Length: 58
Image (cartoon, rainbow, N blue to C red; front, side, top):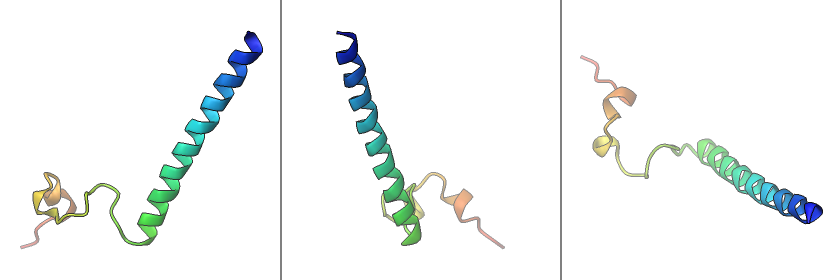
């Protein structure tokens, strides 16, 4: 029973590590393409933080 639990835990850890690695790879690829990681791809007008990212000069 103990070895079975260890194997199950190891498999779950490997799966979670794979998912996290895939998310990080996707974020790096999007960054290289110039895409933002904090947006839905829409314009910044609907974003509550748009004034912080794009401060108005003048």
